[in-house]
Figure (cartoon, rainbow, N blue to C red):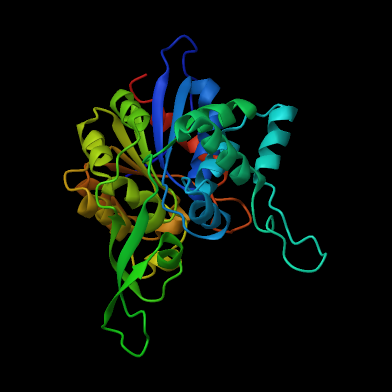
Length: 336
């Protein structure tokens, strides 16, 4: 276990450090914003690999109605990587804008949709290729990295959950769908993908093979982080990659992981991908509590535990991109 030293500044003439971040939703967005902030300092080349299992809200509707990859998590990653100039920032805000009811009577078809979801839907249909669509959308916001889906086919998440019915606390039920798993009652026992062997995105496999760092988390552990380990080709690429591996831990338990300790989150990674090792586990000391069990779980992965304050100052369980970026600098500077 260690506490972060003051961050130094990387040599601007050094080669690019290739970083692949896995996740989805707000958790991935937090890590990408932090990485984007330190990208010039460390000369980072960023790739986000995003889960494609969402079946709720606008993404679920477009997926069901148009047969496209669920765009919501992909959109959030693009917005997180958007450049900071005024035009790019406004375009990113437009992507995130969500239509509310117009107030003219019956709910209209746009209600609940994010502009970026509709844009990605149109681009996917126009290009017939989700990667080409994402690359084009990235250009609209001058994204400071590339956004890729973990699979070129949408997947469904399925979980075995104990105690869905509070009157039958020991009964195990099957819960279908990412949204349903995320909000389920009871304790998740196991998650899996349908189909079991979705094709990995070829560009994501190439990025993993060339990476210097692979980053897992933060985010919903069962619905955003672990699904990447369940895509056979992607899991094999992760194990084969010579890259260093960093795990960013959450700041608080979520409904889908109630009952799991911080150490259990680390153990789950190795359970779903036997042979997985890590180099660094980064956590906020306030979220960890007693660091010894977490340090032990990190060591079981071959990693050292690094503690740094990375939460927003208002006390809510959200990562601050500024302090998270500061914490990441000395970690990613290793061997530069």
